[in-house]
Length: 315
Image (cartoon, rainbow, N blue to C red; front, side, top):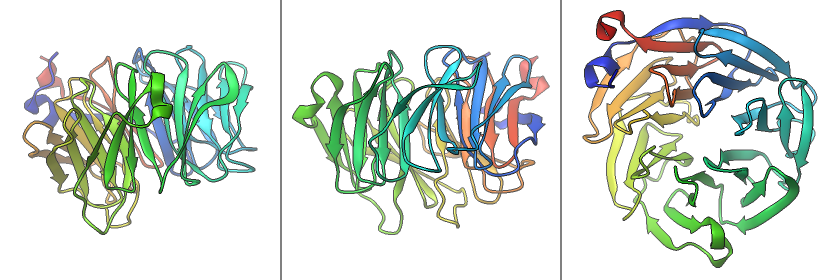
């Protein structure tokens, strides 16, 4: 089934989970698309089966708290940032709920975490204004970069370069093999004064960089030349939250939540808003991701919603 504007308009909440008692702060699909993991402010990690539309397991992280949970490439492991005790990143075996390794170094809250799409490397950025490169096999930081402000960062789909957004005004591209030499490209993005970048993502085809903000605008930028292509607006962010925005797997559409519990979609090529969906979300929708392999989307406030195309679009 191909994703078209008609199919996007017809997306509906097929399943709503109400297991969490507090805000879901991150969701991540497994690379194969058959599982989804979420972390939340109530210190729970919940794993869902995407094929069955069921909740598989809950793992508690009462001691350290949990944020920014991500699957690694191994089936039953994840990394996550901590919200209590310290700002160490933790590598967790999900099937027996034991920590495999700790990654200490950050001295303030970790606000960005990105797993390499091809190997065991991952990136972390913190309010301590550093960006660190890690390898799951070693507790030692593989590379350290000092920045002038809170960083946002992500790997490109090939896993060969990464982008860092600095000071909510410039995007710098680094080659992983020589990132200590500094960026090989840097471009400024004209930015409104009253909000900050809170997230950065590459489109799955690698051609576009998405910059989400704590205001009512999402910026799309050409990944090769740095030219801003579209400003996506129409969603509400009156609480200055870090609302996640995400691409569809074909890079054609962008989805975002809003502070009034709605979810919005745009055409990434034209910048036109397609739809605002009413939902069963009771609070701001801060997590929105599209499954990389299946025709489904997940959105989270303190409830988790699984979205599917309406039946007439599947006929």
